[in-house]
Image (cartoon, rainbow, N blue to C red; front, side, top):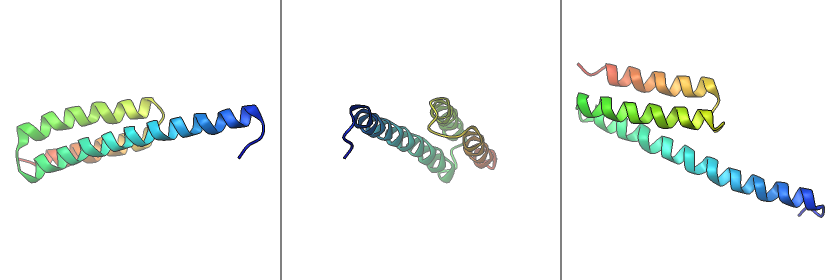
Length: 87
């Protein structure tokens, strides 16, 4: 454990940010699973509405620095491609 006051604070701040990032990543995974479930059920209307919600959550995570911009683009692209496979 750190002895210097500023180092102790950095440890605390890192712990708080790690928890926040984990929560945001978990939320993104939940939304992605919803889209995948809708595609699996072949429900295009539901899949499109879930895709819209998922894109919003993914882009918010990217704006908060949880994901790199390219990762955000890749996730959105793959989900969009998946939904577009429905006729």
